[in-house]
Length: 286
Image (spheres, helix red, strand yellow):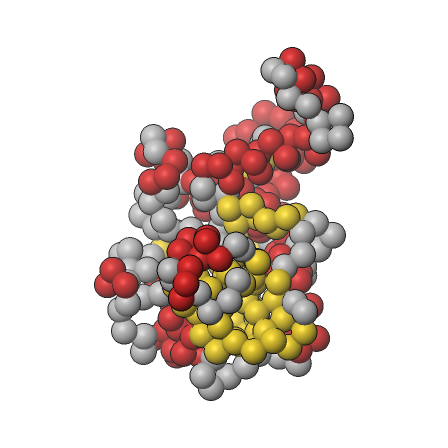
């Protein structure tokens, strides 16, 4: 899980706190992503951090001083909330010492991941619905008989320049066999309307491809370039995710995720709805 970015879209907050720890009410974004992994049966999560982002690792570690205080005061509910992150999964943090691109970040995790298929999820991308994004990727891999699987979302072609866009042949209404990923094309050059989002389940051979991957745009190693190369020899599928997706690495996407999370919670929904009504907001259908 790459989480070494500088978070410049959220300055000045990210001067001292990683953007992945931005809260959705009281739960950091990255907690939601790790929780989805745990619920999908993934027991070990590797986070690729960077210098100055030690708070990411601290979030998933025990906090004895706070735990001792809560225990002494008999605050059992708060104690369970404190301990929940450290019990989600085995969280391993490795450091990307140089900002050489998101493909390089994945390569940095090679020794920690090992030579086995793995989920690669962006630390600020959230999917809600009946099944998490990672659960849908794992299920698709089983259904398709193996290979690597990428998460996709249909977007208006006018938005193509914001995303990596998949090219390939349709397998069914929600699946294509990928032949490549075109990074942020002009709308007229977009090979499809299926955009790369959220993450992948990747075969370990991607590490060999990344190790041999020349720098691309901006002198960085891009994961999408490596996936395109992988697709020339090995099966790579892209599925259209079901559910609602939030790009919480973007200000507007983060605010939408925060508000929707608050509206779903029994301890905040009523007060927030009342506030919005007083501000002149009307519920859909109201």
